[in-house]
Image 1 (tube, rainbow, N blue to C red):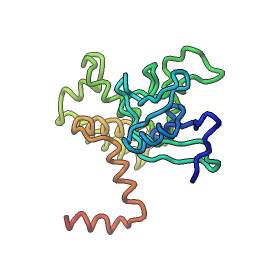
Image 2 (cartoon, rainbow, N blue to C red; image 1 turned 45 degrees about the vertical axis):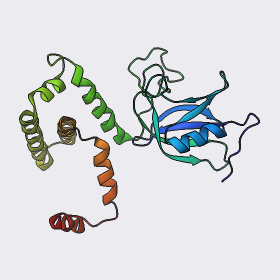
Image 3 (cartoon, helix red, strand yellow; image 1 turned 120 degrees about the vertical axis):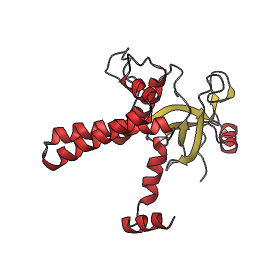
Image 4 (cartoon, rainbow, N blue to C red; image 1 turned 90 degrees about the vertical axis):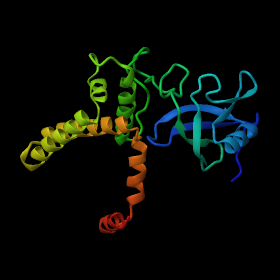
Length: 222
């Protein structure tokens, strides 16, 4: 498909988190920026103010690794599905879109659009990683990571038991609460082992369209 470059030879490019679907930033590309992006696998853009090519992360180190490039139906907008290595915004926020039009100007707690609803698990995983540098006294997560796998495994078993009890006879709010507790402790366990949640999402994606019986049988043969 031909790209409908504007009269300056540019096209807007929207960068999206490939895992969560959250919109990260918008910039401009010319033909050279697009070619460099395709050749290197890292997002390159064109600065209209400097009239120069630039690689995202060339000063901050927070590059955008591009999984896929899509073009819209009119050919005049590009969509980059990216794996960000850090905050996409120069302010240190994960996304440049951390302000709501009619919201407060200085909402420090807003990190931008969350992406798909389940992407909150990825946000939680990032928060768990950030707690590695917190003091154990101020962070329950850090205290779990410092205690090691025996403590983490005990908490996972405890939370799984509490969820099982609520699923049998509990109220919906209690089930929701215990499920959230279990998800959190499982993510702490994954962080302790260095397993990214994206690996779990990829495995679940792989299983779509495959019989559960076939999956279990294949694992027994391995």
